[in-house]
Image (cartoon, rainbow, N blue to C red; front, side):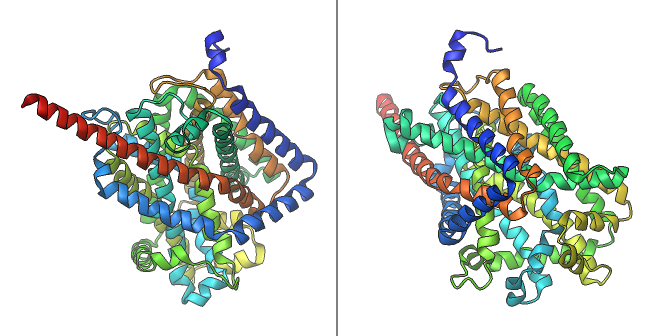
Length: 519
């Protein structure tokens, strides 16, 4: 129970309950009228993804440039905390928590076989050899632009909390340097409600996409005759229990899970690399794909398909930028929180090294393993996918080709649970902080509020699974939710640059005053 009357009065029940009511209503709609709901989602997605899709591409390129500016300008010297403060966590612990909070189990789902979906797209064949380009797009869609969303907003949040010492840990507070007192009024409430809804939409997308793979692994390993949907629901409940336990034990539980997840993750990659028989191809094609991505980075970032010959950017790039944008509600806030004592430059560049580096390694190792079998003629995953369209079964078939397939499946399953737990415990923590009108940097949200958000996070994904929404409609939830978030992100970045400039002017003025006093 909430401790006292003072704490109850500090809870912003509007921000807490309105998203709850909206999500419950949407979930009920999906349960009761699955066909109508999916049709409505598709129509709204078409507008945001097709009609105004270039909006997402412009924001992606712009935020990447901002991250470079922050890292290599004088702003990079700002410490997220006191000027002489040291980092609270070691680089490995910090990097582990950052990586696992920013990426859930979907990184494993996509790493194994995303290249197959690209290779089946006519745009890839138009570009040249599908085997050369199919390995490029996973690296592009999961690396620098997506992580720039996280890192730029992370330093904005870190500056707000650790330097300016603001007690309202919300999106609206980050916009205060631009919107002023309106952050306390209706505009601020609207910003926070959009943020929380996007948070729930992003988690729903992640859960709905990757959890069926976990269910498929369990069904295969144990020969269960229960439907994949039923197993998926059980996994959702178990995962919820794990991350709830972790978040209720604070940052100690979160950091432990994060490090455990990293060990499991890189252990899985090592097994595939060493024992899979595709080590040479993995390294060589991975290096080639990385080079090709850098060579064509601007082209890839600005491709819009104005004639709608293939709809590739609408189906992929725009979806991914939107997907990462809705995840920007929780992940950057958490990264900013754990980055206390680091400079802006250290946070941005360190995030790129650990976050982007680990992500790229995952796609290079797991993706190129199956691509190597395809190019060598040992398997035909493209034909299988074209005939069945079942990506989950395809991934199981890919794992079956490995020497220790059952071990790899078990390790993949455990690793996915760990990823879910370490990302969603940070999300639940951030959402719980949102429920408070004021919360000091060293103050923790009440356990009952945290528990409420832990449970709320699985409501919408459960509804999406039960309604048997297509991959396209699941993706649509993120694209729709990301549109207002893009506008809010621009306000936040603008406010942060303005506020940090004022802070540096204050520091310079203080140094001049001290110098004069010594004279």
